[in-house]
Amino acid sequence: MNQNKRNIMLTLAALVVLFGAACFVQAEIDSYIRRIINLCMIYAIIGLSMNITNGFAGQFSLGQAGFMAIGAYMVGIFTVPVNLRGDVFYATPMNPLLVNIYFPLWLALILGGLLAAVVAGLIGTPVLRLRGDYLAIATLGFSEIIRIVITNAASVTNGALGIKNIPPLNDVRYIFLVTAISYIVISLLLNSSYGRAFKAIREDEIAAEAMGISLFYHKNLAFMVSAFFAGIGGGLYGALLGTVDPKNFLFTLTYNFLLIIVLGGMGSVTGSMFGAVLVTGGLEYLRLFDEPMEIMGVAIPLFRPGLRMVVFSILLMICVLFWRHGIMGTNELTWEKILHFVRHPLDGFRKKGVQGK
Amino acid sequence: MLKIRDLVVAYGGIEALKGISIDVPDGKIVTLIGANGAGKSTLLRTIIGLVKAGSGSVEYNGDKLTGLNSQQIVSKGLTLVPEGRRVFPNLTVLENLRIGAYMRNDEDGIQADIRKIYDTFPRLEERNWQMAGTLSGGEQQMLALGRALMCRPKLIMMDEPSLGLAPLVIREIFNIIRSINESGTTVLLVEQNANMALKVAHHAYVLETGRIKMEGSGKELLENEEIKEAYLGKKKK
Image 1 (spheres, chains in turn purple, brown):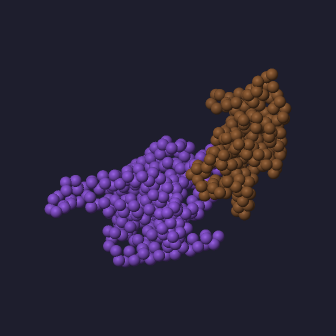
Image 2 (cartoon, rainbow over the protein chains, first blue to last red):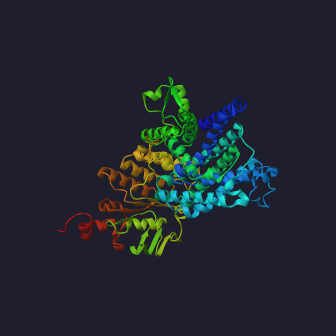
Image 3 (cartoon, chains in turn brown, blue):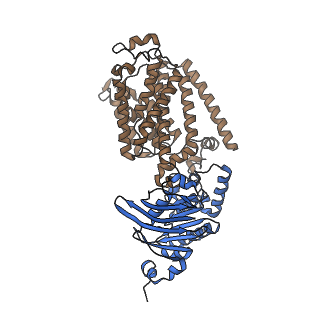
């Protein structure tokens, strides 16, 4: 119990410190870096959401891009100021029922998440009976269906033209708070008996069922919670970009998050956070490979746009070859481990770490 | 007590159980022996609700179980130790036990039961934080038993607990089964290891290709010539 209290205090302290850091970044750092930090956090939310289904409940779902699109469009449709909507919907006029409805961003985010969860519930009922590859293909298909529906519902979503004029949100504090809340809620869920049930289903469906765990209920719950946070992340993504466009939400987007959770560790909450920072930050950092480079006046021929992805892919392959379970595997970075490291920084080199809680 | 009448279960068109009637009285060990494909596992899976019954009835203390789902059946106090142990390999021993208590909400009672299980199986406590997949076969079987006990079952069903274990470990497992029964839990045991199973059983049934072929007390069947020849590997004299 005491240890629990200490962990809660430490977590709160860490959040306060990080929020302070976010305020500092917001005030002092230029907008390009802020954008990257924001993108890291948004990707972390969506990575976490995907980890609920894929990492914890063991259901290989590839629908994240579709659920993001729902959240992003909720933000796009309802947070554009009413007087600017004529400029956006110049080809097809906006549906008169919607044209005067305006939501603040926080409300649009929540509604986007909820709508994504409802859609996930409807999809999940038939689809979650499938296993493994079949589930992946079905969810991938549904994610594309969502995108196609959005492309064709022009009076609501402005179709293929996308929605511009979304009030841009490049606010590190705001996105940090949403990320922190998502992180806390997801951690609490995964550490509850629900989380245990998810893991049991991942490990062995038949044994889980024999323990009295309802497969249908828990798979659906995981899928819906995952969609909810993907919707929220998608909403933030739309707000960060300032525009939403169906082409942003191609199924290839989902692979970014698959990458994040595989790299971070399937079944590790803290792993998803590391994965998100590593993938998003790494892709930005590697931009130097896309620019021409000269060493002592000689231009190196390979440095041209596209090399970045080659280098990134090679790094990924190395990662997957040597850390097959990602950085964290199914472990978490706990306060016990951090404190142990602070007190005995050399232990890790002598014997295999501590047995964490 | 568990009462099964004329139970028929079919996979597709093939009948695995062709009308079976069994009684499991309270506080006893009842065992079911039979060769591969006799329908033993199917019977247990049907009782716990993993497989749907074609016709016939399963009653537990007068409540009909056929048609209920696994959660409802487990909440009535029945539990299954599945064939091949099926512990959750990438979860720790403690997490495995906690999942066994999934249907319960009394944290204090759960803690007390974990304590009790660690007292019964000291090996599990030593390996508290180890992944269940890294345990030996015998330890995994103990964990599977412990996990099932965590839901405080009134009737525990075991599907071949001796599968793939060394003779010494099998003896240990059977001693534990006996002590579980002595503490008041009814046991329905399915086994291929007829010798051990008949020794602990109060009552036994012989299952052959979906039908009950013979029944009697464990002792009677141990001495029965036909059983000796077919299941115990002893020739008629």
